[in-house]
Image (cartoon, rainbow, N blue to C red; front, side):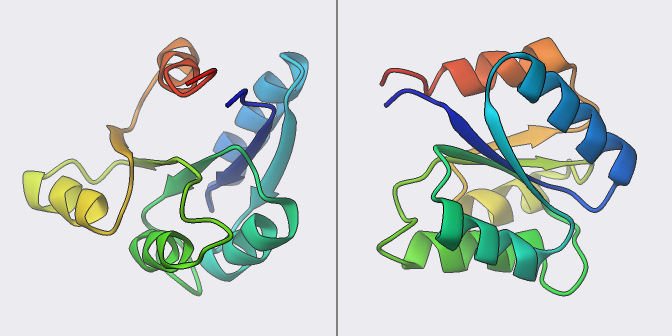
Length: 123
């Protein structure tokens, strides 16, 4: 798989616009969502190659979004990288048990995020 389309889901507007700017500058097609319901809509309509998903979201939390996307045939194989400030081991386990492929703790540098994305590129 070659990563070309990224869905970024975060309710923190500065983080969302920062990631949108950085990924777009690198040539990725970027979709954004500020809540869980929009995240699911974006995932189903755009079928991104990878999803960066915050845990704490309005309307529908990231854990539930992850479960729903992994339960659907259209999106079950899309890698989901959860990004969260929630870094307790039980919170990390909850994200992984929901189906996240990786659980990354904020704050995280952009180069570190890119390293994680590149790990899925051309697999």
